[in-house]
Image 1: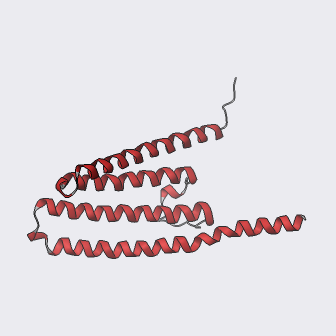
Image 2: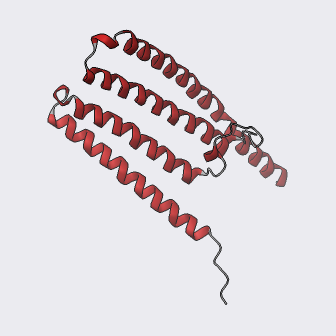
Image 3: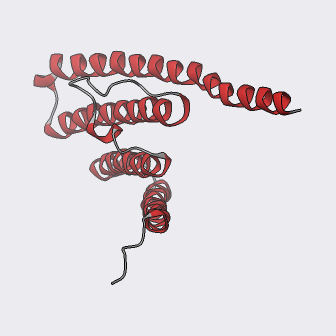
Length: 174
């Protein structure tokens, strides 16, 4: 019976590798975003003289949006793989991201929430620059979603802080 339990445990533990195709798929999506970024950058540069300031600013916001989504994808791929599948073996690599050293599931959730808030902020700024493109109802929902993301991030950070505080060893009393 003991070897049966060990076998089940091994199968469950090896099941984490089923996430590998998901992370590889996200890398393919990242490549698609790079392609999109290059296309939008080319379009912006080649038509720069024909665009007014507002159009240029909206083009720049689109590029920033693509970059922020790419950063989000990198965080999910690297952080998720490191946290849930296997170590990346980057300890001696000179380009190892600093945030990867102290990343756990709670810290990853906070970073992802902050990235989503950043992306939402770009979309909201775009909406405020071109308010006539959307109805007041749509703008209201964008603001509500943005505020919900902020409240969620604060709740996640607060919960994570409570959990970290419970894990911390208590200082010795004199």
